[in-house]
Image 1: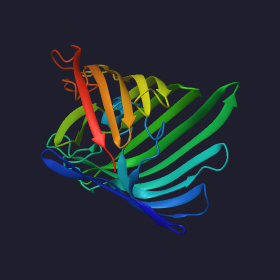
Image 2 (image 1 turned 120 degrees about the vertical axis):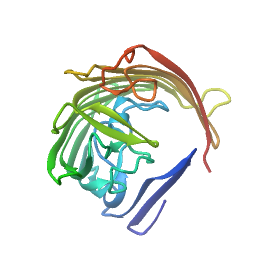
Image 3 (image 1 turned 30 degrees about the vertical axis):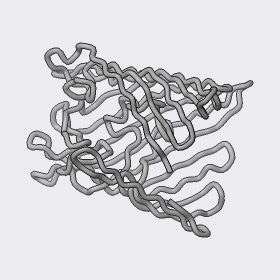
Length: 301
């Protein structure tokens, strides 16, 4: 990443076990300290930013393409005073095809049973910063309208989403809450998404609820900082072959110099990436709770 005068840019490419993928790649122009225009593969402005979570695993919305999603588009950002605006137009996913499953962001997948891909979307997001007593508060809302393309017959289907979020900070304590709703207007009540080389099914329409608590110590003994958290999220879907999904992550992140590490425990029911059949999908034994311990250590130079 870098800047020269008003010009700015950022690029990140990743290599995983078995595949490699773009994370983001954009260039932009600053119109002052609080305003800029960015073009390229960039984070989609939706809900709590930069993430609706503190853990390595993110929240349920990440696996639905509602958190830390990166697509190709144009976004104008304005953070003047207590007001923050995002207005953007996206032209599709980062690769322009739903047939590529080896990607970082979770996007609509083109599969034999669900032959769709993402097309154009219009996004808007507004957040307001407030001081309420000793609390620093952010309240905001997001929305988008878009299209899917059926790759078999060329027909278009609507795609929409809404979110309301709040964040409260007081000293080391952070509280976050979010409600998000998404809907794919496709035949049936399922659709396929993909990332990290695998497609999977999700409910075509659902509400996603998030509740997070985190305690951050700027310096704790030998460490430069420690943040401990509990991130709870659920995807509420109903209908034939559908069921709610739950995910809870408890853990801490620690930093020391160039080292940053996560130690957290994820537990889930009917939840992709933790032994479930998908997100919002009802399957035999899918509602059994499963858990996994994660230790992730990174060095950043």
